[in-house]
Image (cartoon, rainbow, N blue to C red; front, side, top):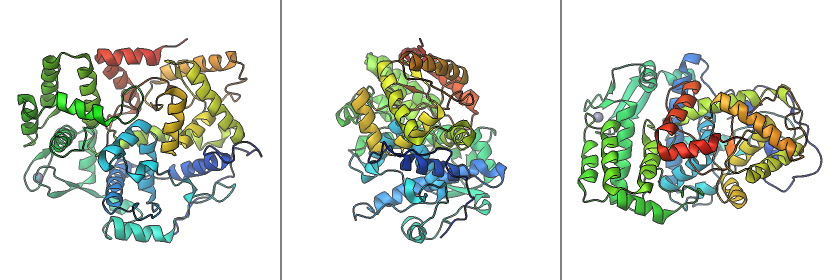
Length: 483
Ligand SMILES: [Zn+2]
């Protein structure tokens, strides 16, 4: 089917003739990305009140889409991945721009050999040569959505009438419960004290119980069903490379089958009344004091961050991530800020990476044109991983939760480093005061996952959370270290 699309001005980035053709980071791909961002800017519910539920349903549809493509072995048969609906693309895109978490989630859920790990974002579904024109969905993609993914149960295009209620499976009795949207939203945002309740077994749902249950289910599966690993354990912390031996070792040492702690954790999950993070964290503390080894606190913290308050199957809250990413989208689709040539933007991105490699442990903030190229790069996940690993001996993380003041100060510091190194003007346009993201050549995971809170409080909480743990505090100091 053809989606009607608004018309856009031609690219604010003039192309220049020579340079990067033949590389993934070429003007055509960057322009296609920009075109997609224009489309994505419109991927929201028509009625503002329903936007949160739009994202919640999109998150569910994205999970279902990945699951079905995986179980149907779609890639094994040599098919091209069909282009999913725009709400699913929105989630896929957002997941990809957390390069560590995306890779770990896909490798953990679908295997380290999953063809999805090699799959790039379908940027060219959208563009026709030089214009920011409309996305043309292939009619066949909708047929595949209806047959392979949803058996005709879910519409290809979400409209506001699909947002009145939301269904979810009770993790205790597998009954499918349907809730009125506004109640579900209040529940997700923590605005109501009353939990939702399963209509069959009467289990109570909160983000706390659901995410605790997800952790315990994964733990049981990892204990009984190798090879399956816990979130937060699959990637080597310094480099972001998969390390199955280490993941296995962490599981064996932290949660041996026979100990009281492990058995207690499994028992906590058996009823919603006992399934809480407070109880799980008590057990974590007990494991920490039993083992008395330095790595234990960090390993447990990485596991906690991959689960606590995250009710989707991944290690980050995609709804909150979309909300953060929209800030970038809104800035980038306003063409007033930039008249850089695309080839120059690509050159500047490479120069920025060099600057980052010359300044390890500093938080550098890219300009919008550099950030646009960087985001384009992340939509080619396997290339991004290899490329940044070659340069830095680690896959570069993406943290978009840096507090505003820190980012502004770091932008100034970055500008000064850039100019001192003889690279010319950093931000030639006054309006380009700083982008939304920031980059640091430090080990770590992408972003914290906190559902339903405003951006400012996300940033503040991220700071508080990082301060709490001494190991994390050291890393945060590294992040904040400026000239
Ligand atoms: Zn139930």
